[in-house]
Image 1 (cartoon, rainbow, N blue to C red):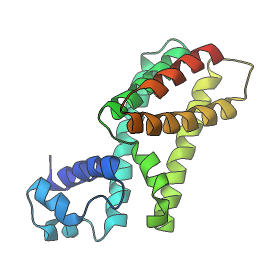
Image 2: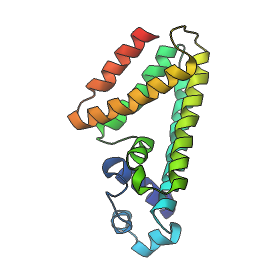
Image 3: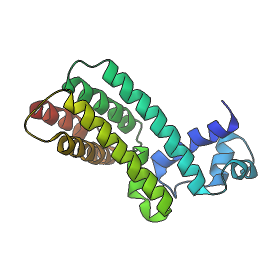
Length: 179
């Protein structure tokens, strides 16, 4: 793994645990074992760093979603797989990168806010297309996708606060009854 990749990975962890203002370039440098100027060599500012973190997180999350889809035979399997991903995040006392960036948007550039929104939109679109493969009549595919993603982010926030996975498990149970 290159130093740049190490910095991105550490920034992702720090962002998920403490938000956009929860760490500095010096903190990253100390953890990765480089000088602060080395972090600045790769990333001029936090905005550039957050773009790289969002891209890396999105790539990994997209691969995970595809694996979930490949291993699923029902919409409930897909939902369970996604909830399991979020339970893993909750058990590590972290937030979803996109959720954390959305929460801290007042500290982000317009470009970054737009990128986070685009990422959420792409996730909603992907999930809507998956839902379409498993017909149900209670909600439109777009509505169900939006409701599920919103509930996931909220449940993760509640579970991080309570240091449990109770809200995510409740969401799983609710979604099983819904679909």
